[in-house]
Amino acid sequence: MSDDSTKDVEIARLQERIYALKAVIEKDIVEVRRRLDELNHEHARNIERNKEYLASPLFYQNRDSVDKRLGDLERGQANQAGKSAAWVSIIGVLFLIVQIVLRFLK
Image (tube, rainbow, N blue to C red):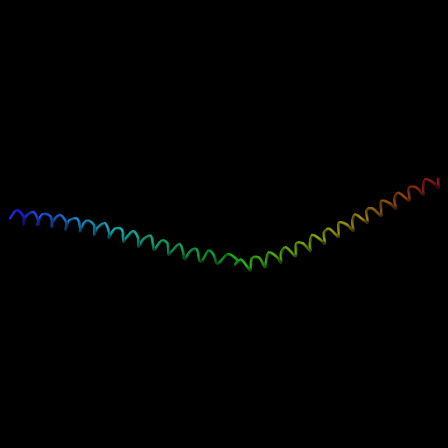
């Protein structure tokens, strides 16, 4: 009989251990589901946030267009500055010529 009672005690201990492990597993399942739900929500937020950004080909196309327009503006500005410098130089030379002529006429 002691052999049977020992087996019963061992079975009862194993059943308690199984119940404890089931409880731990159920808690882990709840935590895994919570984390999965969190990840799914974050993924959905990332998809929404990424809608605000340009795709790479479109970005590079727009960047090239903007670079070309900026280059055109810079060339126009440099042309204008060159023309202004030329006019200032011409006016300066004319002023010097007038000063020289006035000195000789005195």
